[in-house]
Length: 132
Figure 1 (tube, rainbow, N blue to C red):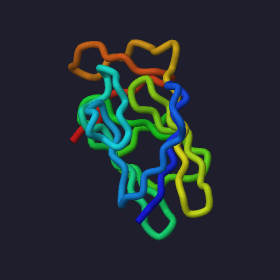
Figure 2 (figure 1 turned 90 degrees about the vertical axis):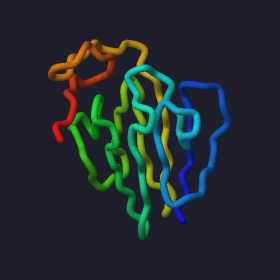
Figure 3 (figure 1 turned 135 degrees about the horizontal axis):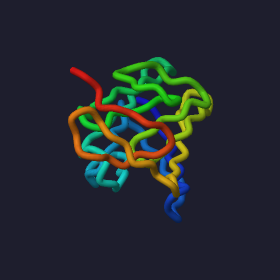
Figure 4 (figure 1 turned 180 degrees about the horizontal axis):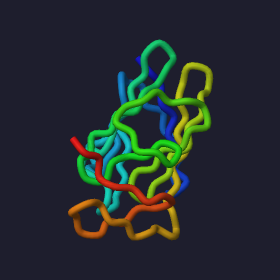
C-alpha cells in the first residue's frame, strides 16, 4: 500500500492523503486526482508505488504526459520531477516512503498541435500525441 499526499495549489483545499496501490489522474471525477480541463483525457495517467519507488504510466493516446518536458510511456519517478498533463503541473517530492504531489494550473497555456489532430491546449512545453 502506498501513501500519496495531494496538495492542490489550484484550489483552496486542504491536503488530501490517499492510501492505495496506485493513483489515477484524469478529467473524470472518479479519478483519485481529477484534472478538469478539455485537454486532459478521462483517465490520463496513473502513478503506482512498489517498494518505496514510484512509476508513472501514460494512459492517454491523445495528449500524452510529459515528465520534465519529455514524452513518457512509463518510467520511474524521482524526487523533484515535474509531470505535465494538459495545463497542470505536478511537482513530486518524496516524503520518506510517501509521495507528495503539488498540483498547479498554468495561467498561460500554449496552443499545441498534435500530428493529424485539431489544436490542443497544453502548458509549458510543446508536445505531440504518442505513437502506438
